[in-house]
Length: 448
Image (cartoon, rainbow, N blue to C red; front, side, top):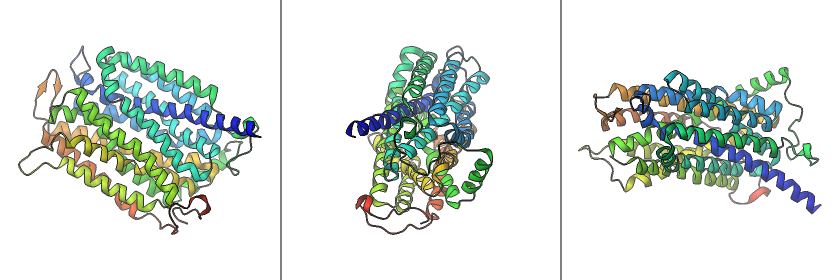
């Protein structure tokens, strides 16, 4: 019996570890463009000579296709399982990264980023589907937090370490390295991950989770049920508004902003954006743990979104004399922004609890669409506002934007967060319960 329990844990934790490694690579793909933005903006042959609008649109392509693939990702995970879905996704991402390395035009690199967005889109939903089937419900938020912290270590890798790799191998070489890593992880997913405990003779952890996939009539029924759930759309909008600022800042504009406005070297600027990722990593673990302990999500989400909005406003609002924040304060502020921003991770646990477990992957994917749609729209909007405020300054073939242009564009951040705050306040009330008593307490969650 003990040996069987140990065997179960090996497959349980081994499968999660490999999928979490895939999610780590997803974050490197996502933020890779930020590390090479100045290279892409440089005039040929060093770069592609992209304007702010073109850079914003290029970064948005990843998010658009990532968002577009979310509901299909959930359907795939619920139908053919997380294993085959994640394997195919990582393989497509590897192809996209390799194609990026050989791109010589905006059109080709756009196709490459679309492939990366399509491939990486399936991973997070696959991880959450795996957690639903292999881990008890009471540990879902904590394990979601552990997954997020692993992914955000990938975001940290995409900051200073990736910037150093770009300096060593060139921007094209860095994409080749990432392509090889993605292919290795794809193989590991196929070899290690199993969709259901029952596949290996273990009892089901989620008793209601069907093992036969979704037939088409059942799929349409599931989608209608999920779409009619008011909580689904509130969580969708919370994720969209609360994540778009960090996706845009860390995913594209942060390093350039710190280099051009605060006159920081690229290595230092990337280390500052790394602080956002560090805050997100620790916050994802903390908020998941706190939610599982207290069994209450609404007050945590409202508080986290509110704090994030205040912090962004502080960052982008200059003093009356136009003075910038002291440099020593920047990494602290950026860390706290990341710490508060990741509170949106609780929306996944909430929507999972309020929908049939058989359709958990599809329900989560609907909410996940919101965040990446927000990132795509924010990147494009910020790029257009920057180009509108550009005063014609060019250094080493790269457009340089003023402090005022950046701050006017970044005003979109608190606007999006305000929308998320309104939606968080509108969340249904929760059944009051005592904090810290563990699994013996009644499970309080949204809408019950």
